[in-house]
Amino acid sequence: MKKTLFAILFFIQLGFSQQEPELLPKIKNSFVAFEYEQTVTLADSILLNREILSEKDLTEVLRMQAIAHFSLDNLQLAEDSFHSILEIQPNFTLNESETSPKIIAFYDKIKLDYLSQKLDTDPGELEAEHFHLLQMQKALKDYKSGMLRSLIIPGWGHYYINENSKGLILNIGSLLTLAPGVFYAFQTEKYEREYLNMTNEDKIESSYRRYNNAYKNRNGFLAAFAVIWLYSQYDYFFTEHQTISLNTQFYLAPGGKPSALLQISFPF
Image 1 (cartoon, rainbow, N blue to C red):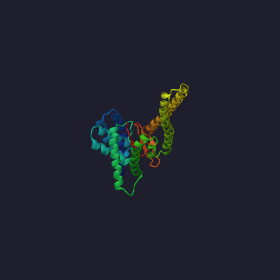
Image 2 (cartoon, one colour; image 1 turned 135 degrees about the vertical axis):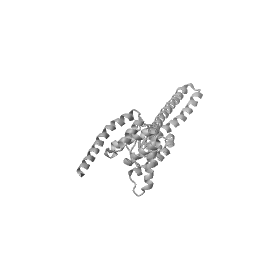
Image 3 (cartoon, rainbow, N blue to C red; image 1 turned 90 degrees about the vertical axis):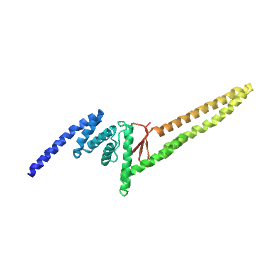
Image 4 (cartoon, rainbow, N blue to C red; image 1 turned 90 degrees about the horizontal axis):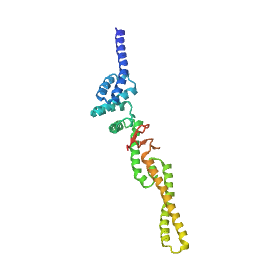
């Protein structure tokens, strides 16, 4: 009797095991085709036997289910699906190149709330993801602190994202171009007045050369400073930064591939 019962359960389980892989391509096809109601129906069917799915497949089914619920304006159900993902992979991140910014923002809030609750409920057992939450918050604060400073002096803001060497190089480059540029700007104005007021024909040519040399030097140094300033802003605001002490990555442009536990995205 026991053997018979075991055999029946075995074949039932085998039937489900064969059924679920067949449904996976179907749910992916319906999801890609934006048939979200069918996606939800297939996901519900697959998740009835989630224990036979691999972690990767389970996470993928929950992801499609969550996005489908969100697209159908079932926000609470979408949140429940995302919560289920976080229970499996607390470090799970949506692919920005494949997901709507609205959905990413919705998920990021759920993730932050989830990790914040973990901090409150398990203060004595902080795991890596909890530390990364605090690090992300501090890194974001530091990044914002450096924004205005970067606009004022090239490289100043880089000190706030732990890129001290680059900040120092930009500072030195700025000093070596701006200071001479300002100096030659005064010289240009001075020599221009002298040239325009010159009445001695023998000295007009030499007076013009002094003015012309100062004029060229002024323009050259100020143009070099402008290039350094523009590069500094581009590097600070539009490139990826890896903070050294916090091990947290910033993705300042859409389409970046996340590799850190948490990432901060600034879409432009």
